[in-house]
Length: 236
Image 1 (tube, one colour):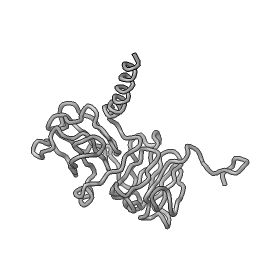
Image 2 (image 1 turned 120 degrees about the horizontal axis):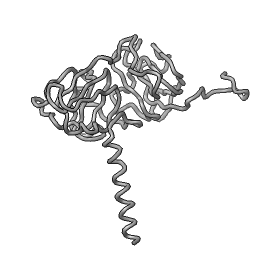
Image 3 (image 1 turned 90 degrees about the vertical axis):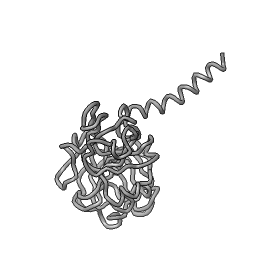
């Protein structure tokens, strides 16, 4: 009887992470990964990976692909990073079959599109211009780093609470502007929240302050409400 119980516990532990991957959706705590050289050099807005959790061979996408059959990446993608824009992913060529739309973020799994993706394209509703906001802005806990001032250039979306080191993300020491959707976040010039650190609340920061401009290496959400208060409870 005891051996049977142990077997049930082991099977449950194995099934839990597998179920989480099967759900797809943005990663609540994105893992660091080595951005492929092609993606770094070309500023690709989307990168596919042929294994879960941004592992394996990477394939950088910079525009519509009506059929992945000619690329050698058909029915191979299992995870991805979207740096900019909204993208439609489909199980069949020419944007047919099972299609879903994804916002910028880190996707450890493509869910029911994993190993079934055959076409993809950017769709209306993306963002990246100086005046543009992500869809449903204000409803999620996110911070978005931009490689240029005034919210231009490439974007790096932080949907989880902690990013200890941007060194392997392809975005280390690159951010020049910032948007915070909800919560209060601290960003630092060194990894593991060292060096120069500043706290940012919800809002737009078209230019980062001295010490963090082109210098952010780590960041994390520290509170839902204003975290610095006097004993009387009033912000200082």
